[in-house]
Image (cartoon, rainbow, N blue to C red):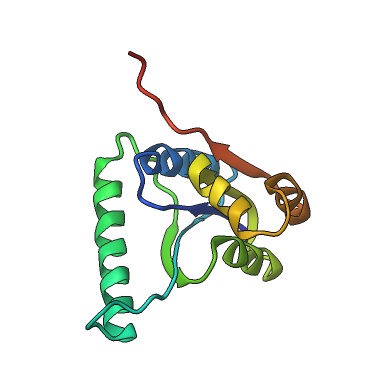
Length: 142
């Protein structure tokens, strides 16, 4: 069974994105893959292994906090995955493995994909050949 892939960056928009991802997975009667990607950068005085362990531990904690804050969460099977690399590469990897039927992400992450690719965001999305849902950032009305 194919899954919905939800990419998170733990920005303010992440709560809306994950709620919509759970709804979409429930509607399609499928499971959810929640993906957090990061670049492996060595910090001064810290080994790459220490950095990786710290980033992944923080991501897990942030994800658990995010889940706890979601009101009326729809129960669907899900897995949380942290991976090293560019988001666009990781999305393409899951699609190539035929594990994903749709991708959902926030506007800010979509824009970052545009910066990572040598092609436009529109052509990247078209090349995926599956639906991509981009959740707009929520702006407070003054």
